[in-house]
Image: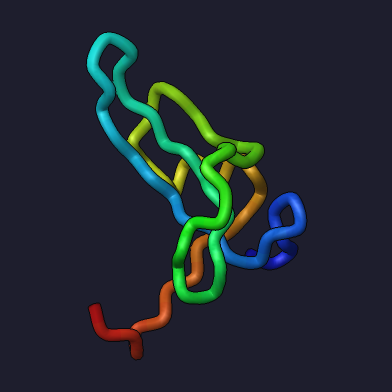
Amino acid sequence: MSPPLEGYEHVVISSAVVPFTGPETYIFPCDNDGKIISWGELEGSQRGTLDYSVVLADLGYEEVLNDKEEY
């Protein structure tokens, strides 16, 4: 993340439909290997959406895709 979100350069964004409460997209800090280092959700986590792009945009971040990465 540039600038870092709450001091974290790396995050994991998790989206799920939770029974009785509906869709949510939460942001968790992680290390550079993607291992979550705290289960306390970060600023910008939202209920009501499954779209991580919306969550990032609401925080003022722009998504940058690297077409050289293999998934």
